[in-house]
Length: 289
Image (cartoon, rainbow, N blue to C red):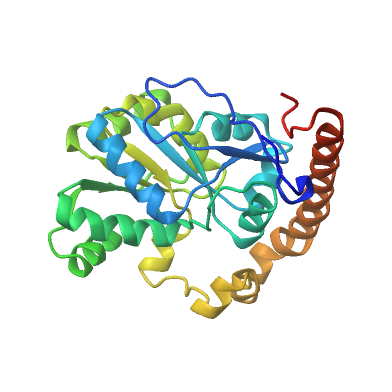
């Protein structure tokens, strides 16, 4: 591919992942080793619909700065992201970084918004939802609220796993419960990294279901935690709202990990663009062909 301004375009190769089919396949932009999908929320919703129609087991990870920084030092989490069928940019810094590295259209796709939009669509399609996670009673409350908000929404079931290590037999029993429910969308609200590790291990066992890790969406949509105002969400300031709400729990995430991410990802972006310029000068093509 020839371009008039090679510095303005940086092509990253799709992350190679084994697939039973290529329905909904997306281009990936690697950010500090994590393959982030270049998607919009509209395309994500459309792809989920395609997967449900296809009848295969899939899973989507929602990835923010915290997730990427943890994956750098946790091989199991990185493996879960690499195996995911889609890794959506849940957070403005991740979106901004990815957009600086690709010419593909993409937007932030955060878990709470994805849950609302898919619930709205499901009220028309009849897709069955299962809510897995949260503190005791939260999943049931969430299912009730979603059903009231979106008339016609089909709830397959709810379950709150115990806050302790579970035996293999207990995990198998939980998965069997989800399978028996006939769920087509499984909302996993365990937070990162637990939800991603759970999906990596169990999502493929649930026939015809798309599992989606949505973290704090369970608490946001049941009113247990207040979301930032929309203007803060759109301008990348949601972190400030969350930090002020839960400083003792989130200070390290936003005051240590976030600055580290900005420096490391910025250097990685500059290095990639320098390589692209060098390749273009040598071959006349950004990918060396």
